[in-house]
Image 1 (cartoon, one colour):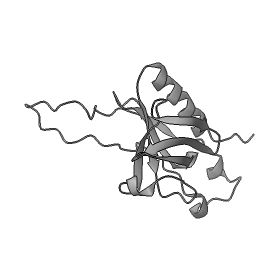
Image 2 (tube, one colour):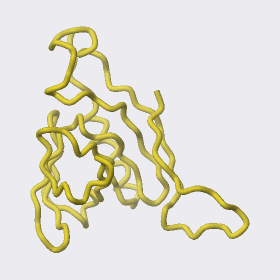
Image 3 (cartoon, helix red, strand yellow):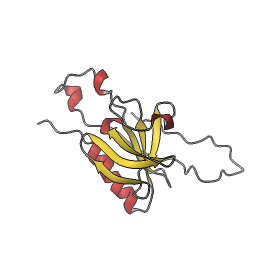
Image 4 (cartoon, helix red, strand yellow):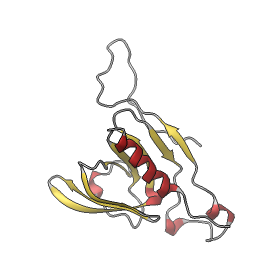
Length: 152
């Protein structure tokens, strides 16, 4: 029996969990997807981190295919539409807890035909923890800036 992709369910559940714990949900997005709608000039190295907290956005809707909402960038309101496949991570800003997802091939560059074994595989996920970027560095340690790593 073929099942739908589970990424949208996981993103939705983690969003609720992060908000329920009074933290700020952020998503890391691959901004190169052909159907993505967002202000591209805010992307850095084809990635963008978006604050999707209830205080930062309006009309959040997570479906099997996309994440959509309205948000303000430089005091200009934008309608944002993100294919679920473009989501690389969701995490709490305050403590980095969340999940990182495997990168998915863009729909136009996908090698597998619909219904093949690779199309039916569930999204692989791994827990992630990122240091708080707002925390002041300890003078005794010279640690590098935290980065996300996809764990395969």
